[in-house]
Structure formats: structure tokens, C-alpha cells
Amino acid sequence: DAGVIQSPRHEVTEMGQEVTLRCKPISGHDYLFWYRQTMMRGLELLIYFNNNVPIDDSGMPEDRFSAKMPNASFSTLKIQPSEPRDSAVYFCASSFNNYGYTFGSGTRLTVV
Amino acid sequence: GESVGLHLPTLSVQEGDNSIINCAYSNSASDYFIWYKQESGKGPQFIIDIRSNMDKRQGQRVTVLLNKTVKHLSLQIAATQPGDSAVYFCAEGGLTGGGNKLTFGTGTQLKVEL
Image (cartoon, rainbow over all chains, first blue to last red; front, side, top):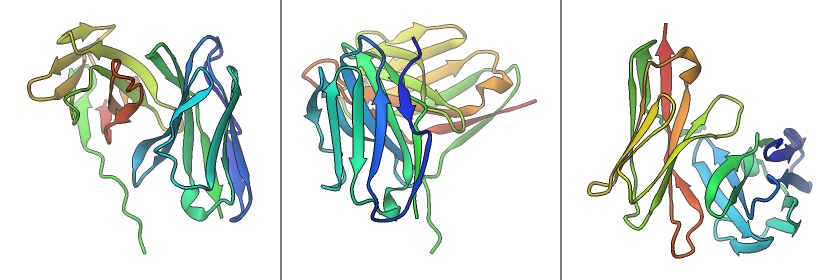
């Protein structure tokens, strides 16, 4: 298996623009997680899905952030409009039945 | 102004020595714990996990110890190698009660000196 695949690896965008991050979980995994990592706050859970259904989105910073999982093999995290303070590395992770949390390589987002 | 980031504790060890990285977790209800290794520019990589019904688990060159009484977790790396240099995170979570999300510690920087 290729592991958790995220795209793009790097994204630079201007403040106010819409940003969409993408994730393909490991085939067969039933949980998908979106994390954000910054120097200030470390690794924070934003939202997670179980069988494509959002379970807990209490970590989503504000309404500018939204996440979808239209099927078992794809998820998106969207920020609209983006702000400089959204600059971070965003990780997607997946697991099967609570075990084997595996992270992707992350998307480094820079909002200027 | 200058931004202030998290201050990561740093552990420096000589190549070939054993390393012990410690972690205090916060939630007494957590029943699943994982250690991750993160190299620069990469995502966290699973090292070893342990469930709360165990107090010790061994992998290849790594051992995790769990002390639920004091909510303490440690990662022992035997014969530390330069490739072990990275930031190590402990994570706690719940396998029961629907708590499937992980809460991460701030991490420890391990530096292996030749």
C-alpha cells in the first residue's frame, strides 16, 4: 500500500483565497483524521470521520474551515477565505478500527 | 513581534547508548497510547503502541513502559543510532467510549551525537 497520500505537498496562496487540501487514506481504513501542526500549538486534531461520516469537528478553528469525505477513498479540507494565521502543516491520518494510525506526509500551507 | 514557539525538551545521547524519552499524559480515561517519530519535513511515523491493560511492550530496539498510577509513559531506544535523531511524540487516546481521537504531547527532540 502507498500509505496515506496528501496533495499538494506545498501550497502558497494569498490571503482571502480559497485553499483545498486533499487526502487519500489507506484502503480499508475506516477512520480519517485531519491534524494541523504549528510551532505555537503543536499537533492539533481538527476533525475526524468514521465510515465517511464526520464524528467530531470540535477542533475546527472557525467557520472558514470545512471538511468533507464523499467516499471511503477521498477527503478534502477547505479553508475559505484563507488568512496568514492558517499557515501550518496539515496532516491527514487514517486508521482501521482504532488501530494503526498512519499519517500522510502533510501539506505545508503558507498564506501571504 | 517575534513569535514564540513551543519549547521542545531536548535529549542528547551518544551513538550506541540507550535513550529514554518520557511523557506525562493527562487523561486517566485514556486506554491506548502510541509513540511517534517525526523527522524534519515528514509526517509522524508510528513506532509502537500499548494498551492500558499492559505495562510493557517491546518492539525492535524499542520498549514502551506504561505506569497508569502516575500517568507516565516512556520510550526506550536501545543502541541509539544517528537515524534515530528526530522529534518523538507520545499520543493518548481512547479505544472505548467512542473516543477515537489522539491527543499529542508537545514532543521531545532526540539528538544523537557521533
